[in-house]
Length: 293
Length: 284
Image 1: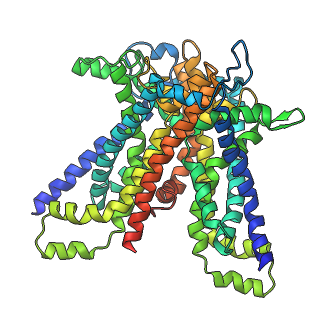
Image 2: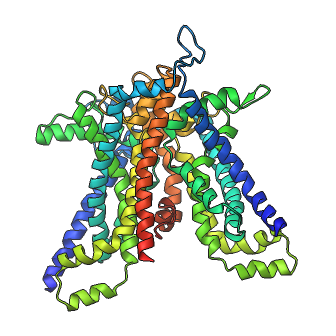
Image 3: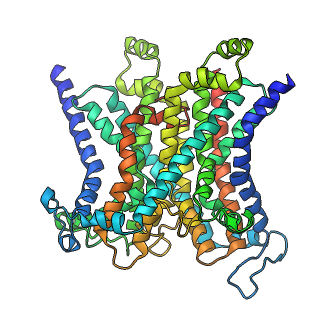
C-alpha cells in the first residue's frame, strides 16, 4: 500500500511544488515585508523594523486606502445586483423558444471570451471624447455631455456599464444551465393547484435556484473585487480617486511611490477581506449543500 | 391566447435584437477604427462601413511588420501554448492522484489549490516582482522578464481551474477499468495512454483551450513582471494609453488581432464555457 501512496504523491508533487513556488512563497514573503518600513527610493533604502504591525496601524487611518476598499465593495454590490437581475430575466426568456434564439445566444457569449484589457480598449475607443460615437450620440440626441475624464460619477458608472456588458452573459448562461436542470414535477403540481406564473416563480423557481445563485454570486464577487485591467485601460483609476479600486491603489502605492512595506500591508488586508467575504459565502454554499442531502 | 403568445415571442425577439446591437456595436466601432487613417477619425464619428479598397492597412502592417508587436504576439503564442500544455499535463497527473489514491490530506490539498485561484493577483504583485527579480536567482538568471517566468506564474490560476474541471471527468471513469489493467500488469504510463487520455479527451481539450485563453488574456501580472523581452500582446495594448497622442487606428488593430484566438475558440468551447467558468459547479 505504501508504494501505491508514493506513486500518488509523485504524481501530485509537480503541481504542489509549482503552487508553493508561485503561490505560497509570495504570500509569506508579502506577509514578512508588511512588517517593515521599506522604500527603495528613500534616503535609507534598506528594510527597517519600526515596531510591531506599524504599517497596519497606519492603514486604519489611511483614508485613501479605506475608501478604495469601500469603492470596490460598492462597485461589486452594484454590478452584482444589475447583472443578477438582467441575467435572470434573460435566462428565463431563453427557456421559451423564439426566432433566431441560438444566434442571439451565441452573440451573447461573445464578451465572455474577450480579455478584460481588450474590453477596456473597446470601451475606450467607443466612449472617449473626440473619437467615440457614444459622447456624440448623447450630445446630439439628449443634450447630455459625457466626459468621464472630468466627471467622477460618470467615470464610476462607465466602469459599471462596462462590467455589466462584459459579465452579464456569464450570469445568463450559468443561470440558464441551472434552470434547464430543474425537475419538472413541482411545476406540474403547482399548475394543477392553480398557481399563477408569478407565484410559481417566487415559490418554486427561486428556492430551487438558490444553490446555483450562490455559485454565481461567489464567482462574480470574487472577480469584481479583483478588477484592475479594464479600469486601468479606461480611466487609469481617475479622475482623482473616482475609479481607484483597491487593486489599482496597491499598484500605484507599490510601483509609483515605491512604498514596499506599506503596500505589502495593504496587500495582506486586501487578501484578508477577500478571503473573509469568500469564506462566508463558501460556508453558506456548503451548509446549504448539507441541508439538502 | 394564441395571439398573446405570438406577441410575447415578437417582444422577446425585439429585446434580444436590441441586446445584440448593444453587444456588437462597440466591437463594430473598434473594427471601423482599425480600418481608418487618423485624419478620417478626426471630427464627427462616421458609422458607415469602410469599403474594402479604402481600408487603411497600415494600421495592421505598421505594428505587426515593422514594430515590436510581432515580438509581443510571438511571446503571447509561446507563453499561452506552453502554459496550456504544462497545465494540462500536470493537472491530469494531479487529478489522477486525487481521484484514485486515498492520500492522507488530499481533501485539504484540493481546497488549497482552489484558494490560489480566489486570491486577487494585485495582492501578489510586489512579492512576485521582488522574488522574480532578486530572490529566485540562478547565477545571472532570474525569472523576471522571461517567458519561463510567465509560464510558471500562470499555473497559479490555471492549475486549480484545470484540476477542478478534470476531477469531475476522471471521477466519472469507472475505477474497475484501471484496476483491471493493473491486474494485467500495465504500467501507470500505459493506463494514461490507453485508458484515461482517450476517455477524457473532450474534457482535456476543453481544459487546455480554456487554459490557453486565460493565459492569452492575462494582463496585470505580465505587465508587472516583464519589461522588454517577454512582453505579451495585452501589455502592448496598454502601452498605447501612456504614449502621447494615441494612434487610435493602430490600437484598434492590435486589439482586434489579440481577439482572434478568443473568437476561434468561442465556437469550440461555447458549450463548455459555463462549466469552465463556474469550476464545474454548474454544468453547462
